[in-house]
Image 1 (cartoon, rainbow, N blue to C red):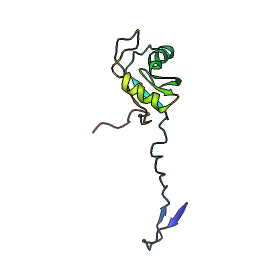
Image 2 (image 1 turned 90 degrees about the vertical axis):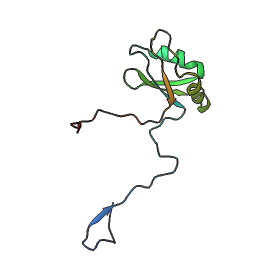
Image 3 (image 1 turned 135 degrees about the horizontal axis):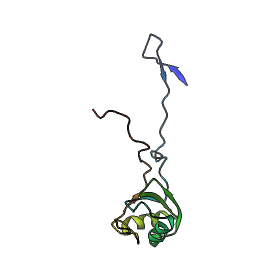
Image 4 (image 1 turned 120 degrees about the vertical axis):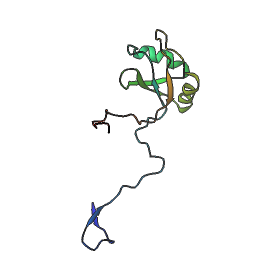
Length: 117
């Protein structure tokens, strides 16, 4: 929807802006979820479920490329427990430590196409 901008007398138009709803600033974030990264590329969903399940009941695991995943728990308390107990641990069979933080849903979707000036 476009409205005539009252401050401009030349007939320029201005597009209506969206109103942000408080508390909905990050609609992409998954409730009760943590972002896990740093595990070996060949790690399976079962390995992640087994290791991260020590913090609570896992409802889903969604891979976000190689070496990272979003792990959803049945409650926010379990997600917080994962954030406090799982960082800097190693999934059995892996050689790398994992990072665990609450999922914010703000991950880059692609690499930039610029020339790096």
